Amino acid sequence: MADRLSELIRRDAQEGLREGWRCEIAGREIYCLVETSSTNHVALNLGRQGALEGTLVVADAQSAGRGRLGRAWLAPPGTSLLFSIIFRPPPGRPPFQTIMAVALGVARGIAAETGLVASLKWPNDVLLNGRKAGGLLAESEAQGALPEFMVVGVGLNVNFLARSVPGIPAEATSLLEASEREVDRCALLRRILQAVDEEYVQFRRGVSPYARWVEALATVGKEVVVELGRDQIRGRAERADESGALWVHEASGTQRRILAGDVTHLRTEG
Ligand code: BTN
Image (cartoon, rainbow, N blue to C red; front, side, top):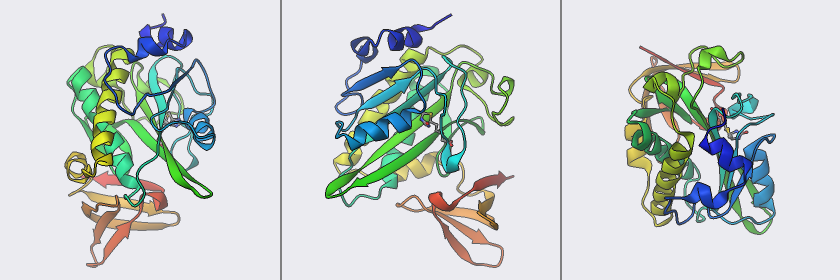
């Protein structure tokens, strides 16, 4: 049965979706899509055409959802949160801090709606009970003389059992599994957007999300195996810096600074 979010998306009911939000930026414009290729793809196109910062693209299903590093992002129709937001951050700020702000907003929104405590796995995963429940995909583009814009896409497994969907990694989870109840996707989306908006507005005013992002990061302090293409690095994740890079202390004593864009896979051990 279609839930409230499916219903609002189907009716393109933007005002209905906005009910109860007090957002300054996120969701200023909303595009509701019953099915699309990828909300990031749509948002990038809108961004190129000059769409307002905060433009939100939300879909109930994606036929070509993308994850990081060219992977597919799978979600049964009508069960997940699949959305992308266009940001035009002030020049000179570390680009990754926009992602930090969104990740914190997602975690806060989940907590506000369900009481679940989400943590973050470096660089862009959202974890519940240590298992991946969602992820962020940031894509940015420069536009000639115009400032760069960034699209941050969020995929969150909500009302389905991850193990029941072929192609989704067995270790993934969902809000349904973690909370043992169906979650109101519409209320969850509103809570997340509200929190993302608050985080991003603060970031725009010059308040860095870095310290709280590090606090939410489950990766720091763990032994990790990082794959960088054909190379593999093993060591202890010592810290993440303000630009979002992860510092790994190898057994040899070497400190390696790892950029999110270079990592093919990161596994935590112990
Ligand atoms: C990852 O963990 O690899 C990131 C997954 C991001 C998936 C979301 S779903 C909404 C948006 N549209 C896409 O095509 N991808 C992102």
